[in-house]
Image (cartoon, rainbow, N blue to C red):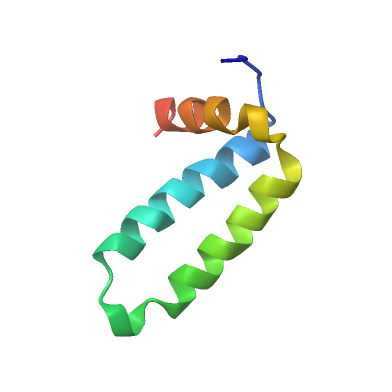
Length: 66
């Protein structure tokens, strides 16, 4: 795994993604549209802003800060 220091805003976006994903798991099926849209927006930002080979490293870095 390549260890890369990611920008603060990208790490924050990954932390938000993790939190929203976990909230989506717990949310009732009929009331999760807002969470799903936010998760899609964050996913798009992460995919566009981080090279694929660095995504696992970013996820690990974000989880260490939760």
